[in-house]
Length: 504
Image 1 (cartoon, helix red, strand yellow):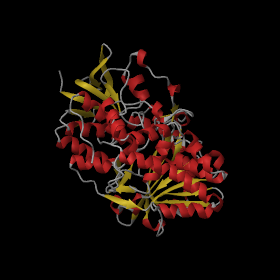
Image 2: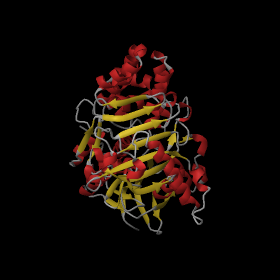
Image 3: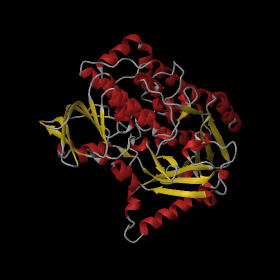
Image 4: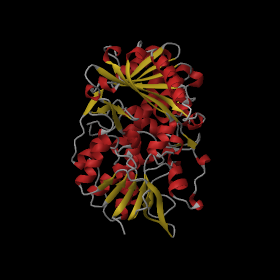
């Protein structure tokens, strides 16, 4: 029998690492198995020729210091619990939106500045704007006062019900409401409603009608309280710190160790088998893989197979990682941008262009006199499967598509094409290969009409098999998967008779 632990975690995505770190700190032994030689999954960093690129995420909630915004400032509270410091740099603008009809608006950290900017564009909707964003703040106020924990933990739920019955009831009511339908109670202007759609799409990859009000309250209100804070050293600083917390408490992380199957015995998870054939055993297993990869790949028993159509499948990405001459970035340029050329196709493949230049905040990510530009659009794996690698067709298609994205980006960054000194490209096939994600997808999305509580929770149909990450409640985004990890750890720790202390 190979090395054993109380809990095995499959994959070093942020949800799984968070669960492992909190369990290990509580004295519940953990082993994390990671396919790659570095942690973090979609929230990792990689280096090329002196540049340190964010593999995916670069807009980070959860690092605020406001004690009231507790449940939402999970990174601050988790790292405080682990005794680890993760320095961050405050970003005064969440995203600078560049939209059709000359509509431009930065989503400022300062709430008054943001609301004023909206009111200038839509003076006839001033009252509706105030009322809509107040609804989001009400969600935020409730969540910021409730301790994080598992919705499947009856003890935790009972505690919330006893200590905060009115807030729990109010939150329960709001879980059945959508962001878009709430907006339409107060706002009639179609362009403003489209802006609210892109506010949702920027992180949820769905329009506002399909986005739960609770999710919107977390992200769009917290940006004015906890704010957006960039970790020094790039996105990889977050998983590295979680790994340090795991190892400091005696846990283990095995890199270049791909899990190929979950071991079952009479319908109960007992451990995992690696690509090299070694088997490891535990009392519980946490999968950080998507719901499709977990039940259709790691588990071969057809009884547990998950129909691809059970959820909407979020798209993947085509990404450009560029090293550029610093002169192309003008003074006062914001870090994060979204460009929409036509409202008719903003939610179609490639319709919305995301752009960031994190070296504006942290110059150490690039050589002196250089900047990083990270540009990306949604994409589908099926489109890229048609190209042959052997003939060079695949590489040529990548270069051609990258050139079109660079041209679009020059709308806000003139001269970009001439300033590029390093270019790394990634398609959905790249994400599928490196991250072991079904179709390279951003994960499952709820269908229109479903409420957020219909998102899979941490428990699964298989005894002692749990899940964390963007396939579970509350969904996509680094802070969301962090919550899933806290929730998962909270439930498992209770089962082990060692309940987690409240994060403070």
